[in-house]
Length: 132
Image (tube, rainbow, N blue to C red; front, side, top):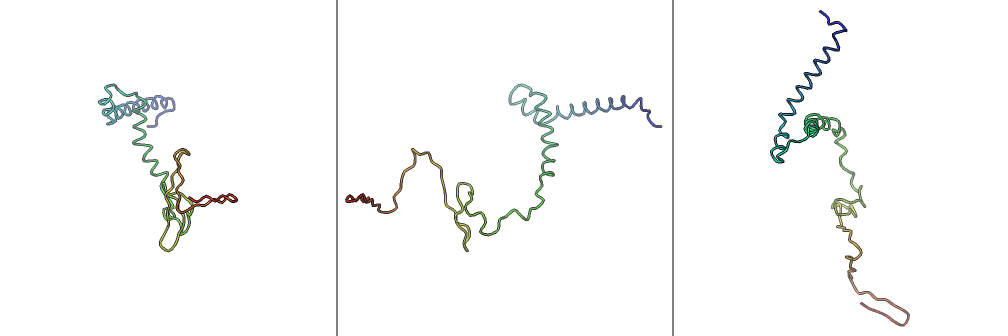
């Protein structure tokens, strides 16, 4: 026997109430609820519990599906590409038969910078000549 259209809103209301009840039961038994309330001594807000539930059971699985690396074969660069880029705190300066050559770089404030001389330096000022 088919339900009439007049009982459809009542049926939807019952199903909505049942869904809310089931969600409330799942949220109250969520492990994060017990962990947070045990550590703080106070119960977390209902929004935080619902947000954590949806984050764990809906958003994380959807993230893995939606942002799956479809073109996994292009995750590397061709030999020689990337010269001049930074890798962590090192700059790629060259590529040769032995591979990439990296040089460590740091950014310092001006007051911490010191000139390092790697050889003799001379300065000619006309008749005056300075050698360091």
